[in-house]
Image (cartoon, rainbow, N blue to C red):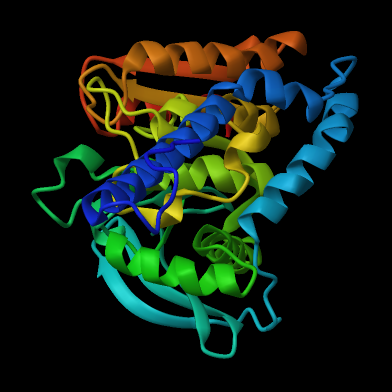
Amino acid sequence: MLVLYENALRAPQPLIDRAIADRQHLNRMEFEDWLRRQVNDYQQRKQQYWRPDFSSPDAYLASVQPNRQRWREALGVFQPRDDNLSGEIHPFLEDDEIVGQWVEVRLDDGLWARGVFARPKDAKKPLPLVVAHHGISCSPEHAFGLVPSASEYAAFAQKLVRDGYAVLAPLQTTTPRYRARLERLCRILGFTLHGVEVAKISRLLDWAAARQDVDAERMGMWGLSMGGLYTIITVPVEPRLKLGIISAFFNHRPNKLAIEDPRYSCYLPLDEEAIFIPGWLREFSDAELLALFCPRPVQIQCGKCDGVLWWPMVAEEFERGRAYYEALGLRERCELCLHHGGHEIVYDAGLEFLRRWL
């Protein structure tokens, strides 16, 4: 305990002021030091929560079901209160090869899931579907290549349709300031922003799976940046998604969330309140979220020139995640696409992965 005087009633005011400031500094730094040690202890802490059984894929799925449920609870996934899947349809785009429409499906009174559904015009049978998720400050229009400056998307949603897939591109709130505001309101009601938006994705999947032109047994998800976030947090709680492609998001989560370093951007000093999902680092670093993908296939796309990450750390975290697949003899289902670009979609590698596994 910091002691600068024996009797505050007799201490000079400058000394009292200094003592107040010094104690606050000590209290803050001591508290943060303790919290940082908790973050750094993740690998030890997770051991008490994970008891995977690698004797068979079915045994494995049963053994990680408690972890899956706790992840769902951490997200605070909202349960829709409206069973009507008819939705509302509005025009989006059309040419000789593809047609796309805006879709609105209700979750609750005043709450809607919105997205673009697009498909090839000449399809003769039900199509595999890819949820193509946009990133922060962007929209389905970015994913479809309708914003020329957004070259990092490689127009991947539009290309997927032209390559024979149905595509569902959800719309999410993307401005960090409004995401923080919505997160505060969600938390006081027992939800999180991410949990409600995951519910929106699932609601759109309900609508898509009921269509005759969609093969409901062949649905996957691919997202860039914040879309990669939604991919890694949604697939663990959405069993209808048979695979995931995570572009420019997979990371060493303890470092990314809480350890500042000049080699990558850290969320701790940034105004992105919604990213701090309660309980994330209790047992769910990105490697363990891959454990909740397993045995479903997953591809991680990571650019060596991407400033939001430091690729050697990503590679280490990936190996920890792939260990779950290797223990089941399924190493080939967990793939790292390490490229020399930046914060971007690598379309050809993703398309090859989809054609192999979906």
